Length: 502
Image (cartoon, rainbow, N blue to C red; front, top):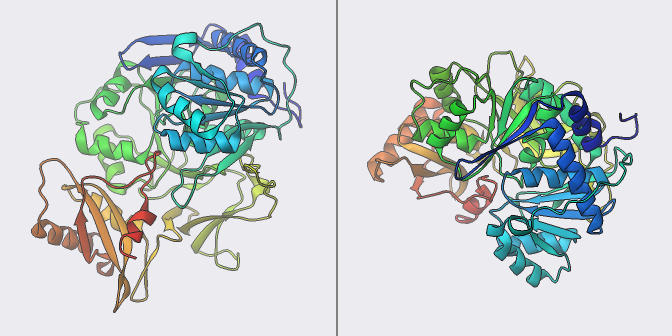
C-alpha cells in the first residue's frame, strides 16, 4: 500500500482489488455493433501489468509520455494503467481531434509512443508528418496493445506526473495540464461525496476518452469505491442510451449537460423500466433546471450537478442523499477551500470562484512547459453566487457576463429560460454592443425539430424570457442557427459568438 509520500493507482488500487475481489466484474465494454466484453478485477490487473511490460519493452520509462487516440474501449484503460504502473504519463486524446489539433499536442508533449484505433490512424499519421514527431504510431486494431512480462512494480511519488489533459481551448490555444499521481488518489473525495457509487453497482460515465471527466470518472472514481464501470465505444444516440441503461442495469449515470438536454428533448422517458438506476450526476457546463425537472418527473431522480475545471478536478457537487436544488452546482467538496471572492480576494456572496490549492488534492502541478503553480490562490475565471446555505450558483465566465444599462446579466439564466420553451433545443446568450445601453443580450437559438424560424417565434421567445426571469434580461436580439459553435468537448464557444458583433 501507499505510504504518505508514495502512491500508484495501478498497484495500490487496481492490483489490490485484483487480489481482494479477483472474480468480481470490474469492466464491461460495448462496441458499436453491440458486442460485449467483460473483465474481472483480476483480469484488469493482469492486463494492466502486461501493458506496462509492453510499454517498458518499447522504451517507455518514468516521465515518458504515451499518447492514446481511441474510443472508450478496454485497450484505452489498459494503456493508461500500464503507463501509470511505470511512472509514465498518459496523454489521452479525443477522437474528434483533427490532424492539426493532434500535431499541436505532439509538438507540445513530445510523446515517446502513440497508440491509436485503426479508424484514427489517418489523422494521427498526418499529424506525425506535420509535427515532425519521431514517436512511433501503433494501430491497436491491427497489432493489439504492446504486451510483455511486467517489470517489478516500483513505488511512485504522489507528485510524479501521471496524466496530461489539454484544455478545450474556449479562450485561446489549448494548454497541456499536468496532473500527478496525487490527482488519481484525490478522486476518492468526489467518488464518495458526488459520484457515490457502491461496490455492487455498475457506473457509466459517458464522456469521450480524451476529456478530463472521462479520465477521472470512467474508471478511476468507480474503482476507488469498488464499483464496476461500463464503456461504450459508439456515437451518442438518445434512444440507444436509454436502452443500454435498461439492458445493463446501470446504477450510476454520469453524463454531460448536452446529453441530458438531448435526451430530454429527443427521447421519451415515459414508461422506462430502470429499476437499478439510482443516481444521476452531471458536470462540464451548468445544467438547466428545466431539464432536471424533466428527469425528476419521469424517473423520480434529480440530477446532481457539479463543477470542476481541467486544472482542478471536481470541486463541487450536489450532495448525494439530499434533494437537488435545480440550477445549483452544489457545495464545495468536503475539505476543499473554495469560496466566492471579490476583486480584492475577500469573501463575497456574488463574485469570482477561487480556491486555496493547498486544500485540493486534485489540483494540477502546472501547465506543460511552465513552472509549477505555487500561488496561494487560484482564480477560476467563473462568476458565481453563494446562498445562505452555502450552495453555489453558476452565473457564467467573467468574460461572458453581460453589462447592459447598469445591469449585470449572467448568460446561463437567459439560456436556461430559453431552453425551457418547447421550441428550443439549445441556446447561447452573449453581449452585443449597443449605443444606448452599452450592450444588450443577443440570443443564438437552435430549434427543435418541427419548429420553423420566424419573427413571430422570436418575439414569443422574448416574451417567454421576460416571464421566466427578470424582464431586463430578455434578449433584444434573437437569431436562429442550425447549430452552435462548440469545442470538440461540447462547450459553447461564446467568445466566437461575441466576436461576430464586436
